[in-house]
Amino acid sequence: MAQLTDDCFAFSGPLLPIADMERLIVERVTPVAEVEQIPLSEALGRVVAADIAAVDDLPPFDNSAVDGFAVRHADLSVNGDTRLVIAERVMAGHAAAHPLVPHEAIRIFTGAPMPAGADTVFMQEDCRVDGDAVIVPPGLERGANSRFAGEDLRKGAIMLPGGRKLGTADVALAAAQGLTRLPVRRRLRVAVFSTGDEVVEPGAVRPAAAIYDANRHLLRGLLTKFGAAVTDLGILRDEPSALQIAISAAAADHDLVITSGGVSTGEADHVRTAIERVGRLVFWRVAIKPGRPVAMGVVPAGRPGHAAAFAGLPGNPAAVYVTFVRVVWPLLLRLAGAAPLQPIALPVRATFSYRKRKGRREYVRVSLRHAADGAVEAVKFPRDGAGVITSLTETDGLVELGEDTTEIAAGTMVGFLSYAALTG
Ligand code: AMP
Ligand code: MG
Image (tube, rainbow, N blue to C red; front, top):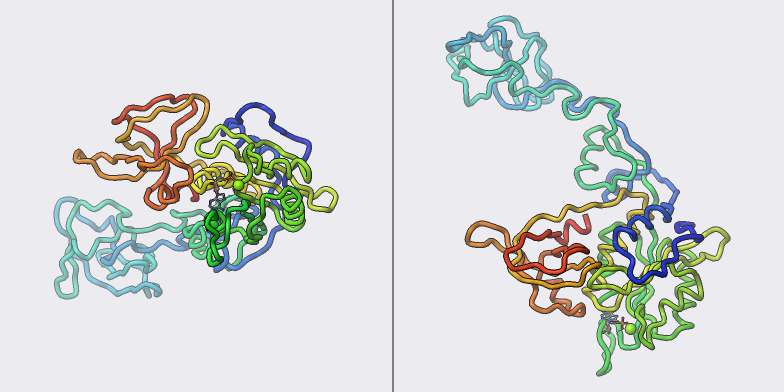
């Protein structure tokens, strides 16, 4: 599992800018190489291993886009109605028995093949049937209401590029091409730990000074959403050797090991040292808030030339979320062989003023609402604390404030990223 080259980018500067972190991930992390053919029913969220070309034109034949009457445009009078004899009826799934001859029309339904000779279709709503004839109005353009072979996709065109993380429509497109299996990279294997003497599993007796483990459940959900195979390795005590042993063991059969908590500089924070002991620390401070202490490293997998990636996230759940979507998600995409995701922040109007330090990117948890003037407004969650879990459940997404921003006033337009967009 040699995903991270080991010779690289140990970062000793004060705070690593997000853009540099993203570049390092792409430059230094090698995607998993194994490819498998999987049925469409299992393809959602998987990463296409190599460009897939269209095997046929889509649609495969010219057909009608509406229920109506197929005609020859040359038969239509320019200024007035045209009367055409109805020659036959073609339903979807059937072909016309005869070509369309001059001054005739063919009753046709959506998806039925265009009869030979026909080039234009009138919507039935625009026509009047009179006995065995149909009367059509003037003014319809040649080709109207017909769909041409290959207009959606030409045979041979790249329809799913290598690196595409398959969405629902991608799978539908493959099905529309008659494909039954797709070549994808193998699923990532990711191990997750929580750390902290105070952290206990939901369902266990909670000592007075303990809290239930929220982070592992958050991370499991996010990783499942990504499409990784998750191994839940429970909660580790704040005990250096236990951390080292557990992380080392997990590295042997996973592509990525993730911990939360214990990554800062406190006396009980042993994660950073553990990585330095059992592997290599790549960086541990990123210019992001919430979540400044976030470590990335490489841990040897026991076999020469193989290593697992490591991500040590902060302990506070909101910081876990933000660092996951901004640090771990790009890392997962790269490991999985997927193209980087560049969600576009949509402009919304801030109802709040905000001051921040220059040089780091900040993410403000907000809800959206419609203002009286119709604009979309972002309302900041009232409590900033990175430990406030309801700041995630009660909001719609994050306002992203760039490194150069130091202050925004209420009424300023800001960039909004929905939770859905962040884990697209
Ligand atoms: P730490 O970075 O380990 O000092 O953790 C920062 C804060 O996050 C502390 O208040 C921890 O109790 C809390 N925290 C750590 N791990 C978890 C967890 N798995 N679930 C919920 N809160 C946690
Ligand atoms: Mg801790």
